[in-house]
Length: 391
Image 1 (tube, helix red, strand yellow):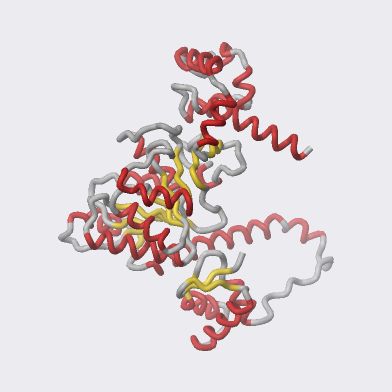
Image 2 (image 1 turned 90 degrees about the horizontal axis):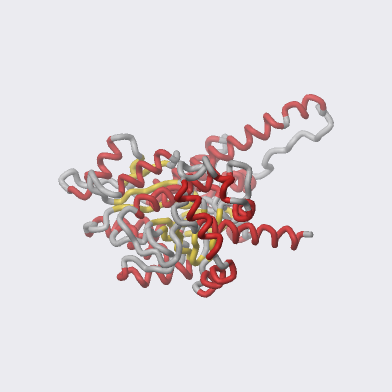
């Protein structure tokens, strides 16, 4: 029965691939059809006259023509030959982070893999024609975040984007390039090495079909996916009016936190970052600042989940008082440390602060001893100066 279910899901994804490639049908038009209670296969099998009022006459004509010429086996073979995956919103692999953003993509093409949803992700964006300072900071943040186990997301563009991704990959980390073309096309061409490494050590992702060449109006569209896949957006060098601001705007609209690297007030390439900071964006002087925001975000999320659990079980507890043993808290300092550490890397100072908030007063040397012991036992993984829980 499981195989039949899996086969049905795969077949439905093939119909989704067809629907996504009907000329003139965008995300909103597809949503109109699906919100009408039909599946992708239902749409394919239905009489196009049923869509009168939902689609324009031209869209209906394109839909009818596409049904006649679309070859499911041939299209699947094209993707397989280039090692490209088509992942629609009905696919379980589709990122949850993208499902609820404004104008979510209906589907993605992926060469390589998608970001791991269980691991933190930071989008690094900035000027294409960056200064030496911008190049240096892009390398520092790209490498530092990768060493801390954070996935780096960017647009594979010249300048800050490509430099940060190259540094992340060189450090052995994972990085993902969101492109304004088909995933089988490397743009810009001088980033071919980064493109090839992304395909091997992360992924190249696009909502545009393979073979699509980049156009200026494609890049603002892809920016919402860059910020959508990230937990935090980090801006390294940007002019006051630049394409980076588009990504910042979409990030804020999506509820993502934005951090900016400050620069000299006399440097026009830092005007955008300095302005963001003056408007309330967080300041990122080093990798610690980004990890701190990730840690705080994850901690807040865990607190919300705990609160939801308490509310959900409130009525049950009223009728089962005394039927369950009282939950025991952590018994040792090592247990306390493990409760403070998650998959998002944290520094020893953050752990020490968390212990102090719990009323546990120990010295730094004592804490380092506990951390070394937990690392030796395999309960924690040390990434440079940071610690994270083993999955």
